Length: 367
Image (spheres, helix red, strand yellow):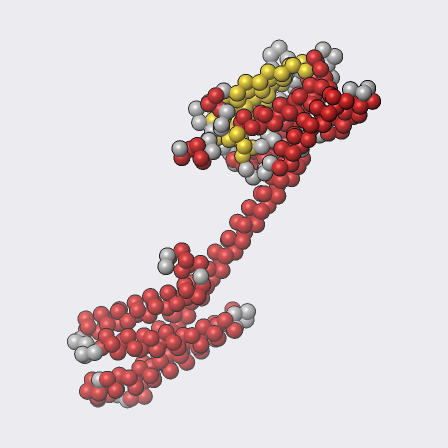
């Protein structure tokens, strides 16, 4: 059985520590006696027997500690002292009986040297009680350590669930805000009896919404899949704006299979359409690119609209809820290993640059 399996099972861990601890006590006791004087024949067997008895005596002690676990600290300390000394008395009494039975000559010599048999018993009970007290201290120490580890695991699990909830909340806020306008456009097409175009828009809208709702915010997608889904969105907008919306999309071959968060580009594109296309009679151009820059994946969304000229402070990393959510989502996913910056385009417009850790899916990395 592996060490991990033992540590995960509290019963197995308890018995493993019991066997290890009492075996260590028996070995160190034997070495201590053998170092001072010659140990009698059969002494290792004796130590093994009384180690097992000591281990058995700790079981009711453990039950007492479990029963009084919720008591006050002072009460538990008193219980520990009483339980340790009482179990020590029982243990030394049994030890004496076994020792006298196995080594009668050595026992007689010990009694002859002692001032009083009761004094010898009392000293032995103090020694045995101290062993039980050490066992009790180790028991509480290990139990508190395991409880703290469990508490830490619960905290980490709660933090993980909180991060997942945060990412899902951000993803839901990143879902298409253009639905109302698209439905209005479809309604207009139906009224104009342009059923073919209306049907195409419904089909593309269905495909895009399916992708946006089914994609897991905790998982990544390839750049080519993300761009393909964005093209569904842009083709819908293309029907709305016609020639006013010009698109330029370039994905470097090396970056096509790189991984990125799903639905990351949509709010950026939506932002460009809202400010660069919808508000301009002539329309404008939106350019989407994806490159590899050493160990980074660089994504850019560029438009030639009015840009951020109305913002007083270019260092403020947001032009709306979509940008704020992107930055929050990237922070949750990559910590400080990401970068999102807004830059003015020349001669006008806005450039959003996102740098992410460059990596392929595990299946490609292992091949």
